[in-house]
Figure (tube, rainbow, N blue to C red):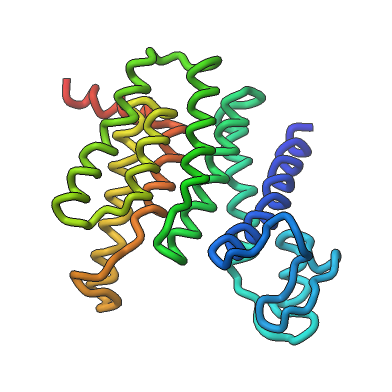
Length: 250
């Protein structure tokens, strides 16, 4: 029975991941995500329902459009699978609880934010608003942390980011708003963990790109994807990681 629940949760995530692919593709192109059918981005042929089965359709079509036979980006099934994984790990972490629902929504938002920022180096304000709404619901009804912890979380990374942006122009406004909204949701302990995870991941990727000469010192690298990963991980285990680290210092 438990296995069937896990398969159902993963499948639900994968189905929603298929829609997230539409959002990630269409929003930067100013296309409606609510109207119109899915189409091949290369030949613009309408994609039939049997070609829209998450993950499986990509396998059956051997990674090619059924109409023009051009390769389909492997990113589409990967995002579907990743969304399924986000749903699955959220359930495994929190079980049947409100936290599972918030984790699923937050993880989905972080995935969309990460992919759009990776493509365009822009984070849309609507996603910050969604996270703020999550934060307000969480604080109003479910949190076990004092309100001041959430309030400090709002400022603890976003304010240094803002100051750094003024001085160096090296931090985007989207990153500042993302850490503010997420900080309110997470509280300051988990927000610090989210930042350090994002900094370590982003810094590591930057070093690798420089070593491979894929980037230059003055090149801009999207920081949002790494912050988004950190935020989701921090919601799952941020406080535990923070407490473990503090215990090492005592």
